[in-house]
Length: 77
Length: 147
Image 1: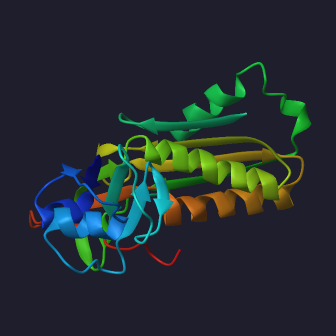
Image 2 (image 1 turned 30 degrees about the vertical axis):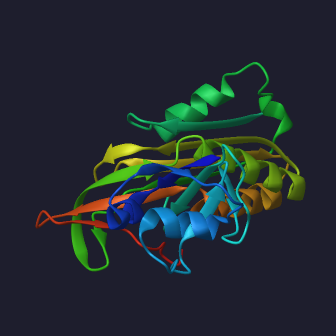
């Protein structure tokens, strides 16, 4: 199983990459996706999580083929 | 009608509104109120001079989110039409960043829906501002102003 992982804006710079493919074999949550791809154990509480382009929770389980995105507070408008 | 567009080139809010109103589905005599918010780029932020900015977005999610926020506002207020255009890419001070326009029968719902939609966009739409300061340094805007 695998998920596509995206990092945006300042998080992309902190993590050092904009995207990654994570392969896994047992069920995992978005938080575990973060830990396995960002190189950081803790997720700052300002980080927002989206699964398949909808806001989600870090404790939500991901499914094979999902797009999981992590980004800082939004600043549009 | 709901029209949501991300604009990679120059955004002309008044032209966008004019084009929107020229569509056959737009019945001008049906709406007594049109509330418009236009956001433009400032040349200062957090006490520093800002000379340019890059607007990053999450392609796909941004459009979906703006659509969802619009539908939510339409459930709350008797609004007939919504137009949202938002710049992406590189901009300079005074450039328009966003236009949110709503048409309703009366001003109360038009003002309220326009305000609510703009505030929801600021909170929920995945855009990020990357500023270039006058001394050449670049930084991410980490939070919105209070409003």
